[in-house]
Image 1 (cartoon, one colour):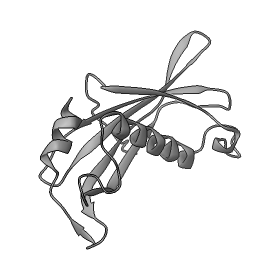
Image 2 (cartoon, rainbow, N blue to C red; image 1 turned 135 degrees about the vertical axis):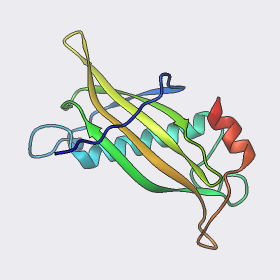
Image 3 (cartoon, one colour; image 1 turned 30 degrees about the vertical axis):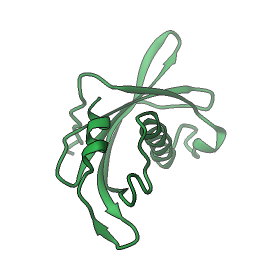
Length: 144
């Protein structure tokens, strides 16, 4: 079976600690795949806020919509873990960009990689339901 390979950037510009909540754990006793997506969403919102951007209605009408997501699960996360979620932007186009994520935790004095992921973000006008160009000021902020 072919596995997803995500080429992560060499450096991440943002890092946030997110604790694993009991509702993040599935019947297998570890963090569920749906919870990983929610954790990535929280990290994305916090990252965008940190650079002065918004996911909805940035710059007078430009919002973001997720076009795709790829997640490569590398290890198990458990209730009580504190995930370190690193985020970086890259692979810019006229209409969007990729966000890259590395999720790790420290357990027993070891760093464990939980997941590597990327989301394709497209600029979108929700009012008119159409794709928009990536605003120049947003790209400048993402490139820092």
